[in-house]
Length: 313
Image (cartoon, rainbow, N blue to C red; front, side, top):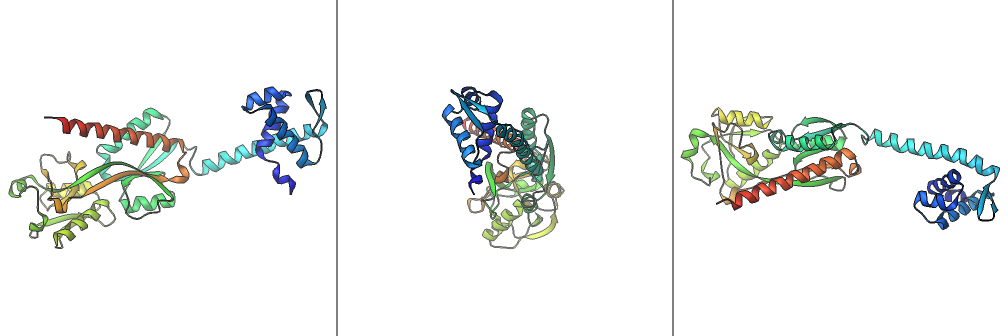
């Protein structure tokens, strides 16, 4: 069908000319050449199989058909604009709220600093925290019930559907009650702790994956006295002397007087990578773009802090 060549862009150019009645002005307003305006109008006439204008010297005088075309073309363009807006609104593009999933361990420092910067950039943005395990947050991303997540970079997920931007990498330590710290040789050999009680996070948490990996290397199944569903309960139980656990270094400030974080021997050392993950289909979402910018700022800040520590005498 020849009508398939009647595009929105050609209608836009046609309407631009009808508003100015001047080829040069229409071209200037739309930042195209006068030749492009002529071509779009002639193409419309060819596809409509009727004349829209008569030539009067260099000017184009609208025929009755052009006025009819203008009325309905405006309706088409307005409808398309509404269509785009409502489609984006349904996906959360225009939403004044941002649903941000994050690990419990990130509420101590990382999330507050990123959100503070985000609110400075976009004060109108309402931010909702949804805290859970890595597994549950990734499922929420897949279901579209959150807009983005600050999580440990997943081992297995559809990287074609999600954009992933790594913020920092965190070392894993052995967390012990302060009274036990001096009884252990540092760096710690996990294989010598078979007689100790341990506390673990439930399956699905990022730290649980590292916990399993470390003890596979150590060559024994740890005696797990208690399983908990959040990292604050985990630290509280260590502080109470219930057992030891493995924990990321970012938890160092919690229960500082009652818990020591001890480095592990080379064989058991591991890193936990923290990333911002969000759907590629939402990569132009204004709120997510601002969030990504703040994550980059935070990553640069951490890099500068680490460099200052390394340079310190």
